[in-house]
Length: 202
Image 1: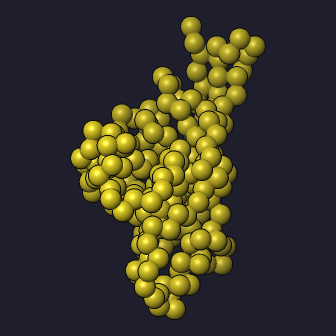
Image 2 (image 1 turned 90 degrees about the vertical axis):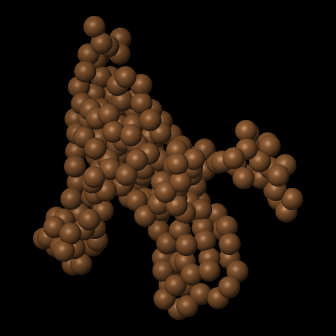
């Protein structure tokens, strides 16, 4: 309903069985486990840097898996996968940006809501698919990158700045004894990519 309505208020009026509303700063993905589905949302964001010329980068400081549908019975394997997903910690370990593609080196002019050629650093790649497949919904769900973004001034007046960006590859993650060398994706174990940006405002 939302994508065809002129506003959220108008969309809510078209939902006869609607019970309550909740607002979130950002949607990060949707996961379906058997007959159960959960929406990953950010409850709290902290702006940690601004990429030139004005792209705000946020650290996701609090997340929540919101149940959308929980009817039906899960198999043992589906229940184990679901429990592992709900227990996995995302808080303060991931960054996102609504106007810039953080999965690619700076600078780039890629559309952050299109499928890029490389998904190596998009932590929520599979979670975004329900949104990216729909032209009207894709801008609801930006790429989530496992890593950090920090900005520091280099002088007193703020005319010189430094940004340190770190992103972790999703091709071959895991603990030391399970992720070694190259895997079938030709991904090095626990690979990180780092960028150091320095600029001065004249």
